[in-house]
Image (cartoon, rainbow, N blue to C red; front, side, top):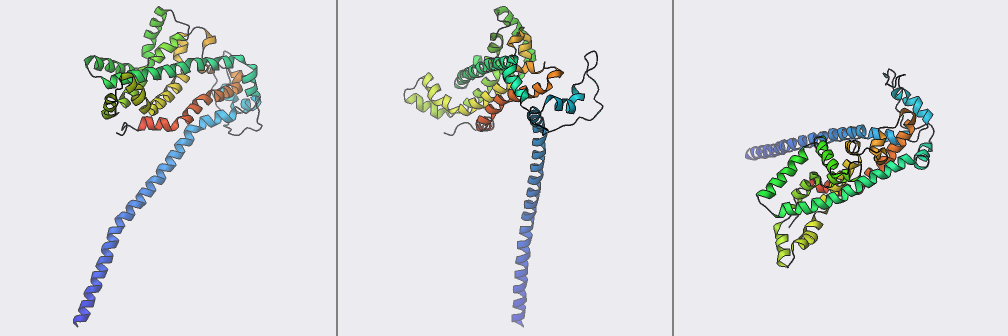
Length: 324
């Protein structure tokens, strides 16, 4: 009799242990299911948003290979004008085509070989943006080193002024820039675009915040080895800030590559306009050329972004500074 009771107790203990193990595993399995469902939904949302944002770029590239007649048949209602030059109300549904019926390179031939105005504006964009990007990074590196290495009331006031200027939109400072350029006699020259761009506070702020996270022990070790301020900057701080400089350079290049207000206000000669301004002036009779020019115009920005994508992510997202 006692053996039967003992067996029943043992069976009860085994059943209790199995139930306890099941009850412990059940919440864990529920968490895994919820996590998998959440990741799946997040993936579909990200894919949908990616396709939504990439649609204009894909349409621009594919439509640049369409002939003028095909573009007119698909988008003629959008670009149609009234007798007095106004826009008409689009009552019909526009046909968005991703694949052309017949691939045509005539637009690119016209842009690259038959239309020197496009190439002139393209080189104007390069002459304006490349010096601004390079020298703005140099100014940001030097100013960021000074702001990160030295403290004081004057330093705090100057850096606070940089932050205030950075928070202001460019349209607010456009009138003072015009007045200063007029006083200096550089209106309608590239210097009117270069000088305000080179001393922009945005890059100074980013580089300063990154340099402040460089461990002081590295600078102290360089000082003990007899390095001066210039060697500390060139041998220690500058190499450690390559990622943030790459990231800042990409952001600055894309920002000034798409500038419109500055050339319109500070340049009166249309031959000096960059391609970003000229794109908005292509009339309805050159819609096919507009697609081709827009595609060519996107190439430098895309190449810069793809080349420095890792540096952009590292420089913006990695806020822990440098490991000592």
